[in-house]
Length: 155
Ligand SMILES: [Zn+2]
Image 1: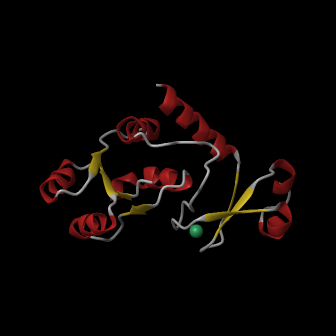
Image 2: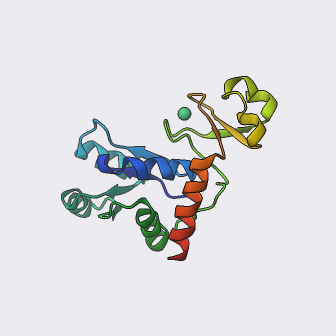
């Protein structure tokens, strides 16, 4: 399974990739040099909007994908077209969009006290981050993602 290192301008894409189960780092304070070094050691594909950064990747033989567009649907479509990235909803594996750790599916009983009151009446599947404890369910944000992905696959 492909692993990624998203540049600082691609935070939204990084969160989507994590949610779809892809191990994705996101550059905040790290230098570009550090990002390229980590990517090379870890066999990660650098995702960047910057032609300077992709030129550096090219020179250092670090794998990269140039993502010049702003629209998340087109960004995902590019990953799908170029890398044949498997995009399935609901994801088979999913990662925390906050901290990139794996989510574990939980029963309603296990998390009932940890979610907003009433949420359990409208949703059946819940996941919890193994590291930070954040809880996820298939809410309206998920349907929005599904729409984008269907468009990415079809267009
Ligand atoms: Zn987490």
